[in-house]
Image 1: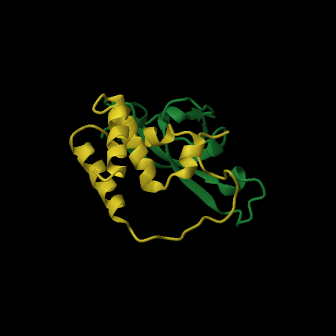
Image 2 (image 1 turned 90 degrees about the vertical axis):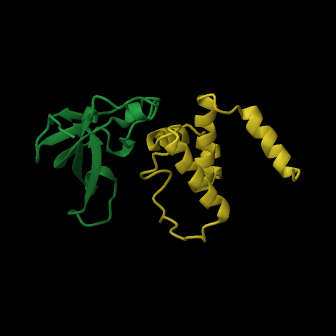
Length: 96
Length: 99
């Protein structure tokens, strides 16, 4: 699906903070954290609309965002080079 | 506190139980029913996820994987007026009595 992404490959972004009572795909443990855009997946029908029987339009650009695991977990015991890669929709990203 | 399904690092960081079990017949039936409801436009994956996430913590913790699907399908069918909880409960009672 055609898309006009707001963010570019390699750009640093912050994950929005918020726990709406509705369906969303952004886990709390990355909210407020800074990550880097690793992949542009294109745009997909918005699951926040599909989850309630909506048509999911307009489609939301989806990104793979990369975070150092050491930024996410206190006392992380793995190597400092360990990364989390997670797919996040554009409406959950903020410019830094 | 994260929502009930948002499990990253919660409630603790104990190792994950990776043990498997043999697929049971009722689990295949639930999977098939899920497919049928999808084909008929009565649910999509996002709706099923949303319905699973709406379960309260105690229910969520007590149900197995396909039991969560079953509970979620009931939520979606009742919500759309396809069936009522009373009808489902009556059928369950009848089945338990062997009819």
